[in-house]
Image 1 (tube, rainbow, N blue to C red):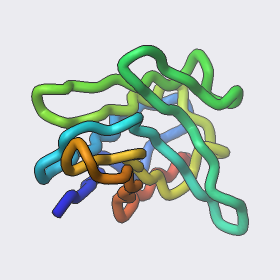
Image 2: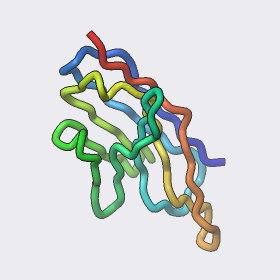
Image 3: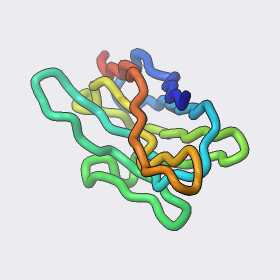
Length: 121
């Protein structure tokens, strides 16, 4: 069974930094991408950043402040968040997209349980 587990959330002051980790476990033949999403109270879940073997993408509000990276050997993706703002407060979710367990299987998406990030003085 594929599992996605996030860690690294917490409380930080405005202007501070946090690094989120997302570990993917279980056998995986291939996947399309991994991404970080966030959902603030009363708001829709939004894509923050994603990574494939070819490129990384970011939503405009985090460009220049957040950086997504991956460690293939550890099946882990990171989100380095710098110069955090109160509006970055949300539950952050990691998602592995298009995961295939073997060559013939269709791709499936797997979500983690989320980790809370709170930016407040």
